[in-house]
Each structure stands twice: as structure tokens, then as C-alpha cells.
Image (cartoon, rainbow, N blue to C red; front, side, top):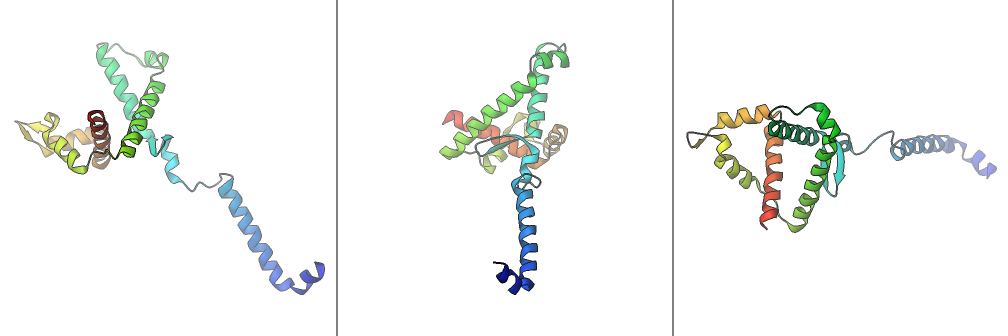
Length: 167
């Protein structure tokens, strides 16, 4: 073995360096120093094929808080929300929705872009004097804190769940 190493020493040194670099690189990927999945940083959970993003969690938490606050005539406090574990309730609801979205995907049930467009055009939330108002729609989207794409993706999820309920 030593004879072979002495005979091939010119090619042995680059081979050792390449092997060392490959080993260290594999260690970074395998031991988590580098994450090949950049989407993981923006999500709090993954249920089947559906990732639950931090933004979805914030929206659901705010939605629940606002609903409870409205039901208590503005008397609902952050302390009460904490005692009720409202944050965990939001996560549980999102996980439940993700289960249904996975099921819908398995069944081939999904709201199309056309379904979303029809919903937006016919929704009374986006109409003035009985007709669709692009300005009103843009204001609602802007006030939601989402981009149009995110807002419409959320609508698509809601419509898919609605379709699944009717199927």
C-alpha cells in the first residue's frame, strides 16, 4: 500500500484534497449547516403536500382574535387570548384545513383561476352600485396586507374547501 502511495504521490495529493472537500461539504448538507429546502424557513408546519406559512398563521390568529373581540363587543383582551391558547387554536385550524386540502388534491378537486375570478367579480364585498369595482377590490387587497397573488391564492384555498364540501 505504501509503495503504491509513493509511486502515485503526484495524483494522490489532489485526490486527498478533493475527498476532504467533498466530505466536509456532505457534512454541511447532511448535518443541517446548509438547508437545501429554502421553503422550510417560511413555514411553521407541513401536512402532507401542504405547507402552512407564517403568514397564514398570522392571518388566522388575527382573524380569530377579531372574531372573538367582535363577539364580546370589544372587551376581548390579549390576556384572554393567551389564556385560551388562541395561537394553538389557530394552528389546529390551519392543520385541519391542510388535511382537507390534501384530501381535495387526492380527489382532484380544486378551485380554478376561473372560479376565483368569478367569485371576485360576483362578491358583494367588491361591488359598488351592483357592479364590480376594481378600485374597491384593490383597496381590500391592500388593506389585507397581502399581495394580489397571495390574496387570490387564499381565496382559491377557501373555494377549494367549499367545493370539497359540496362534492
